Image 1 (cartoon, rainbow, N blue to C red):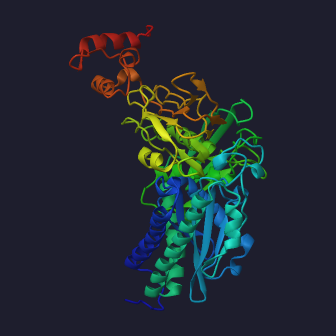
Image 2: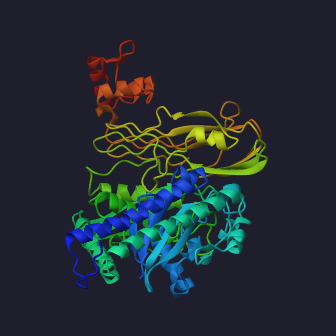
Image 3: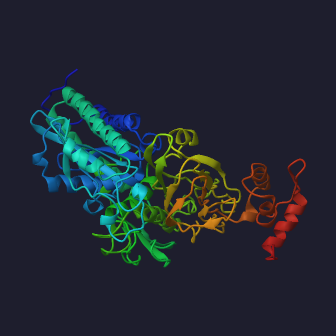
Length: 584
């Protein structure tokens, strides 16, 4: 039924219908990418996001995918449209871009932008961003330890890749000639193009139902509504200035710890993340642009306010990143930035910890604190072709004030899934020699930190280039209120033989039949360990989440291993000794 009324006042029902129509359009875009993509990283792990922008380049609606991409799309799309000239885009056209120094995150995250018209009126733009398995550069999977962005892969400025609904094969060919996995990259890019076409059809259905002027007026109303709601929620948080400091292992070229300093200011409905005091821009790949760092404050604020608040320009008006340029969190051209998300992940954890002073009953201990980018490449003798595979691995989340931390998940700004071993083994020359939780990896506490993952990769068919671009081997996730630290990350060559420890940023050749063990951090604990429910301690021992030794020496729990019952008298005596400060 068509509503072509010239009266543009928005009644609540029409408002909700339009809001959900836009959200559903971006969600259907997301389903399209996932069903049509080639690579495991996109089709299975869901490392992508979708959004709709209005004609003024303001983000109006986003799919629920990767929190890390929220600030990247919000920053990159307006810059790209202004630089290319939005007036130079016609229906059916599409731009491709991935330049971090034009508002994106790192080169692997490639964005596609397509205009949406209602007749001759430019209604807005559909966009999506996905992490591609390889974009060239010095190392397979584009995860190398480099000094400048030119070494990290192909840099794509805003470039027209679709014209009137047809792919420009010259532009696509130029991109694919510079990557190591052209079949997967080509398939993933076509999936992204298809998603924008699906989104355009859904927006057209909205225009069929409502007057164009009414839809345009709705954009303003939705964004203003979101801003009012978000400011009211942020204003309900304790006003003040909150600080925290942490460190990354090093920039990949030297072992000097990289300092991250955050000051969170909550004032009059605004949230500011000030990064003054953080380390200077690095010569290695451990740098983040201001657009990437924005994700840390955006995700934390979103998690602390009403979860029903939409992610759009109205929310972003309430937050900003402050501090000088050329720090490790506000890097500028030509900084290498492939490790940007390792910084943003820790920055988000520090932002949460800074807020613990104001919200002690809501803030969890530190989670795994890393993304854990892994890349493998070589000549697959089974398919007689070069293969390129990348993934990230989950870990423990921090314990919460009233609950244990979840085990083996992606945390904070990270929302991808752990790749199923069955799918990986079918499609790549990789076998999993070990996959499970790491006993004792979660920080001890009244509530225990979540456990990290051990994932041992074996390469039975061919020599392999193994690359890790991660962190967390030197500075473990911290606990709160007396909670213990989680175990740090470990990367080990030949875990059953020489057990050589690898740096958190390294690339090695693994011979045929070789193994590499990836062990991610556990989350920090919350509260004193000797205050934990003894029954929960015994349950953790039975489930092999903690060892019998930890039960006794850290938690002060004595139990009968025959029937798994707590000896409450001996436990009380042992815990009393702990509280009196005796050596455990």
